[in-house]
Image (cartoon, rainbow, N blue to C red):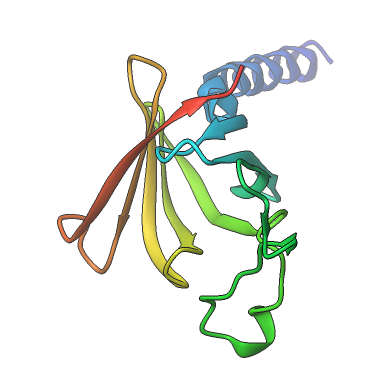
Length: 147
């Protein structure tokens, strides 16, 4: 009986160490970010085991008296979807050290989707690197957190 209790305590101790080793920084990306053009707020949220983001505010939400649409989308059926609420970040996994990778970013200005990684910099800005194939072939923007 004492052996079973001792074994149970050891297992419990090991499991508690593993739980404390989980990096709490994964959720640091959650919240609302202002894009580099300063004309949209993107809310980053958890979607299952990954992180996603959607447009929740536009400086100029209307065009010709109606909500702006995803008019550059290559899918004709999606061209009539409003930009407000549009999912533009998807599939990001936390890799540690304030970096999220393996995701996609959709650029509604072009109607194109790119591979992407995100990285919170020391100044608190969010580095957003979209690319095709290799990350050296791409573009970097910096977003700021909305307070």
